[in-house]
Length: 403
Image (cartoon, one colour):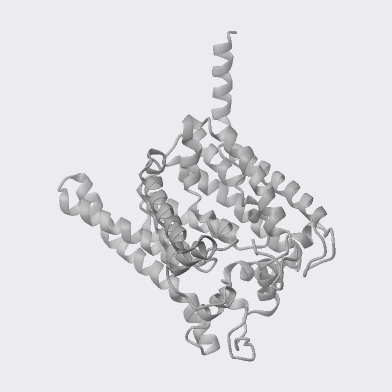
């Protein structure tokens, strides 16, 4: 048989493999790499606030916010906000949404396996499910090979180790990808309960509402400009998109309202969130202040201008435009949300994970050839992220920088 014929047989054999098999194989390969990186970093870890030197894997992955989620698992949320001598609200559980610890607690009530087993298991299972949904989402805009490459970019991303530690990121990624898939396939009513759950895992309601608003305005524009089938189709999407935007907006404020009702303090959630940054919430301002503090006011302003221009260029690039209106609108809405409400810090890299649709654009660069450079670089960056940010080292009176 000729080489051409052999290659054809191989391609036909691959097509007969059920699509979840290669997706989960890529996902498991990513988790193996992350496990090795976490074990290596744990072996280098000195004494920390959570353990002695060289902790076991299960102890090491329970650092940082994992401890807050475990506290919610065991204690729930405080009815009285903790305060310092001056009355300022201190760090507490209200900064963390309830779905992840609540799900682990429900499973523990059934199995009795405890936080140490169930929390990372839920994270890994949710991440595996997310990889399958991400693949199906990417298939709406790409062939099978391109979608699988996009999953690989997510699975080996510089912050991919977060997908297997007791954080809410995996569960949020699963629900976000599911919501985006339902919106991209025009199943807006089915997306509504998913959005409610998603907003119970992480604060994603505001950027999701921004995305839906963009889609709503686009549907209105198409409906008014066209009287053909496309216009009628767009007109049929206006009402469900409006309702989905209402659901997303209400879901965005549900947790702050819950904190208000339980504690009796109207700004309980915001006061708790700002306890970590040590100053009042000031939309957009930190992005000007942070570079100005390091480089000076003039250079800091130039950094902000460069970031804005870089963002515009990114969304005008053919690779990003190819991911489609829904995914592009989500990424734009999420970046606008971060610009308005996020305080730039060491945790910013982890917070960028919801921009996962850009992985499909990255996988397409250079006709896919860039992937073989991108993945090894991502693994190196993942080691640096775990070793420098997840691992704890004393660095001043307030300790280390959070991941």
